Length: 450
Image 1 (cartoon, one colour):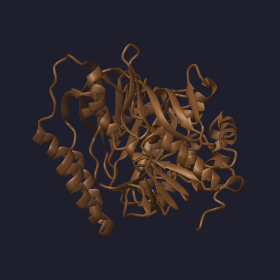
Image 2: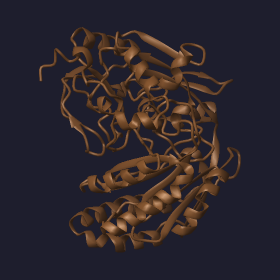
Image 3: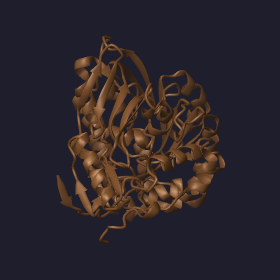
Image 4: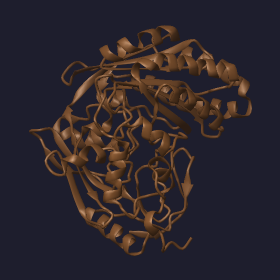
């Protein structure tokens, strides 16, 4: 389906653009035709997922490919536990799709609204010192290149491209399907407890290494952290899920409904933020439940926000967070959103924030109606001083020159991009900033009408 472009906005309302044309391909062949037609017309092409990136990584000035209809399971290898998925499949669809095969994702983040291709291409991750980001679970993918040809990349075919294409930022082509290495379905026992921030910081390194999945949230203007420890259990163990009313009270009424009102009020009257934060840290936590892994990993979030997240060498996290805390106190800022701290294993994907090192993550947020830039820029200075790498799908202010020093294989990735997309068919302003080069290399978009 083809339509004249309307204004596109991302979920956080931090980016918007009016594409020249919108197409909704339902097959890989349709994607090929759309890319080939754009090439003939000198137009750039960008595929969009769910719009959950906080950056303009998916902004399409030319042809926008909406992959909503490119969804579902294509094939399953039950012996190996591998599932081939269409690129537009949403993460929240996977529990239903994988259930007949007794499979699950090895790890997940706490939001499941993204598409599988969008989440992996931007470096989405969960937490767990022994687990990599979502892209590490990819064993094969199919890419439509700038000429409209199909390129298969796997462990046995074009394998040298796999470390680049697993986390490709949408710069190498349009992913039409991915093969994910799944694991047998499992349960998680979740233990959520408020603790003194000092104790959470002191134990962070040890618990990140020891526990299956450990994270904590620090509420600014308090000395309290909400710790979350998830332990993996066999799927046939006894379950003790949260009662429906308890989940609704904690996750919907308090975490979304009441919180939305407080954030809105705090924008107009910042003085209400510190007392609310102190109240929130008393009302949250102290839960112990066991359920299927997606029901524990994922939290429904309806309050819009903007986010910046940095990956650091894991040992640097406690000191960096202490500096963020001191910064907020020194500037006397009123920060209504908690700061999130997680971890991930080292991996070999070239543009992974965890490339080559065990990593810890610090994420800061602001309500979407607030100006995030003074806070985010100041925090970024701290993170950069600790050899931090910004999440590609979350707000940051870095460019190619500074990012090249942070990624040992940066130039190798750019060389692959230039080989697969020599005319900048898949480029845009954001990719030009973070990878270098013109957003319309060699005249792409020459046929755009404005």
